[in-house]
Image (cartoon, rainbow, N blue to C red; front, top):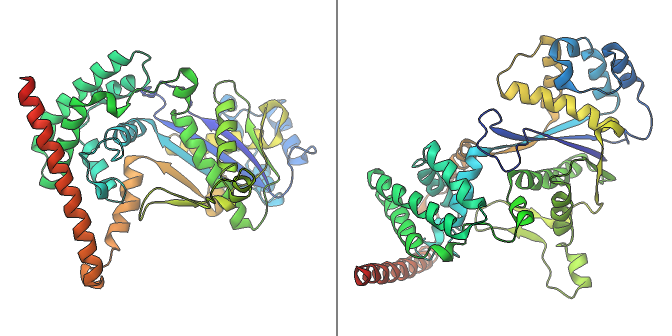
Length: 397
């Protein structure tokens, strides 16, 4: 299969641009190489629109509507599939904040089971509810500033506000965990490593553009599996800011499969796991071809995916779409896959998961006993940590 990837809503590291709240990735796939020859339907579309290359945003939905039948013919003739991945930038900042301050590997005041299991999601929802827009802006500025002392200062200001707000949180257990975690972070600010160090390239690696591209990588493997076809080529729209990082990320995942690790005498590593009950990815299904960065002016596939992505973006933003163009969306949605990184998407996904959990009575007494022992030990460790922290604070006073 051949894949063509375009993005929209890119604001670089400026994630607080209210005019572009989402970052989108569109992935077009076909069993044939759309760039290997001229496509007569595409030539006819250009002729009707009187353009050399189609840029949907410049043409507009009224003119584009005149060509909808030809686009539908393209989809059916070349068996095109379109997959959509999007990130809500504001929520990405909140998730990034949570994953730094509440990472149990960095912050020992966080119970193990409240970060490394799906319990992390109710905790994330609780933490995110404490933020207003001003705190969100500060959280991102503290993350990307090159000044460590400035980052620590801003982060401490955020924590102070959150410690006040959390006192009114209705769930007592969540309130306790958040209070403990934030208090420990405040007095151990350097241990959190909140600011991204290592220069501009490292900052780019935590941008939503790269996180979204990770979803694209996994999505290509999923689409390949669904179609029961290998990946022949992956074409990405050429741009200076993130192409190098996209190539780097792809190569990282391609090098983690067993075959490449064996050649380096490294332990086998088939499944990428985060924690019990959390999403996982089979690295053996990772495609092997390197991604190619090509100008949109030289790729039929990128020209088509630009149109489809523009339509979905307009739909998501509640903008006008003609009945004719809606027919294109209806066809693409039918077979499309995708993912969204946002608080609401996580809530939808994991609230259903919690609803399907078995009753405790379905577990053996031995299993429940072991779980209780682990929990009791973790709680006792945290109690010692917080007691030591309180003693330290009193001593400093």
